[in-house]
Image (cartoon, rainbow, N blue to C red; front, side, top):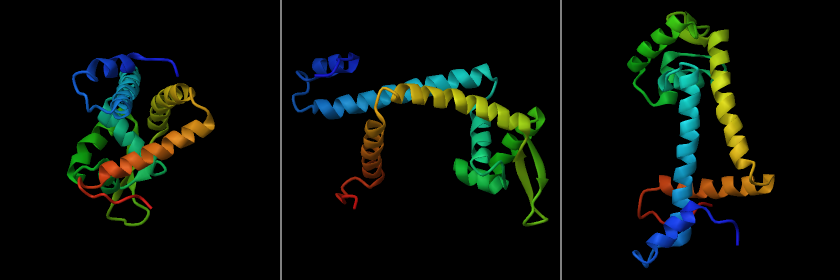
Length: 171
């Protein structure tokens, strides 16, 4: 048996109260929640140290994921926001020197948003700290175990995205 953790104690406490409790389901869900909470706390602490708001980071992240340049409507789509909502975010990032507005290369009526060197540096510092912690935590697993975990979580995520009652099995 592997080393016990506080979640094992949580499951042990609830099994007599809920006799139908599946200890593996409960353990997995609680551990995923704790891991998510831990990584979120690391991200929040990192952003606070960089004096970067979550919404600023999200906008920089969306831009970085598009090669450092995008139309505001594309950024809005990536962030699942209304395009009009992006204007205030971009304005704030322009004031901080993290992005600039530039003419579009595909439509002269459009203005794109581009990461500046400062914006890219802040994004890379934040993503680096978070990524390092993800590597540290998941480094407890071998490469094969990490791949298996990723594959298993993909199946669980796909099941969560299907409507309840849809018993479809991924192919």
